[in-house]
Image (cartoon, rainbow, N blue to C red; front, side):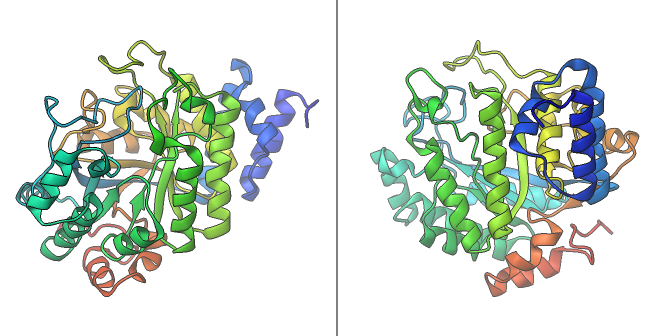
Length: 394
């Protein structure tokens, strides 16, 4: 394979994609570095794979974004979400605030309550311990569990928490009150933990820890969302290695419901404010290679991070837009608003696809989710249509 021409390489990739077989690591690395003249053929190969395994429909989840707490002990070089106690904008939502947003989301047809939060901030900040004590909880994860159950029992929305690293006990507990959960792998590169690198003061971003959580979720058969963050200092080979690590965990356990390919966006006031962002070509190449590495899996890219040309992402072989909110901002990327849902529909249909609203758990993973508790069985049955998507409004 190493001596093959680019054209032969792409022919092989397209044939493998059509058969549902992943390309090799070597081929993936070479395709990421391939000349621009074969770029259109790379996209075509990815589209062949999607047409074979994820045809016709592009999905999204209509959600409310709930920043349960933005206190966090990790100091990633690109993040504006996290705060220390006393910083402007530092906040932990009260139960009433959570449910006020959830009920507003219900009225707007949302079906997902996305919980994002710092990773166990009470371990670092006594102020967070005081807040939790006031609410009546021992830890952030206890509070998150209670809020997931409250949403599940008192609304039509389904929780999807992103709480950071989790033990076996907490994976089990949260799986009983949320049909899916997530943890971005971001990268497998330990180089990015070094001084002045993206994860230099972020101990919870150590790849082995994150892979351990994702693997344990697989052992527990928990529908799981993960993905990579591109452009934060990783090499192209490391980018491929992260995708392969995700794919191999799914091949072993069958639990990864979607793989997100997210592009780094520079933010003022961060150490990486002047770091170069991935361009359109870099993003599309990575998406196409992701599709060819895992032709049968759900691949997502967030449209708001590629606006105004986000429809081009469909050319890279994605089959999902991720969570889109008609109500709340993207608190992780507040400078990048969600597209209007009608515009998203129009742009998706212009590329020849039907846009369908899904639940936070994908249809093919709903049975796996429902097995974790009776309340999930009941709630999924109430909000899913016959195909496992979100019920259409009457």
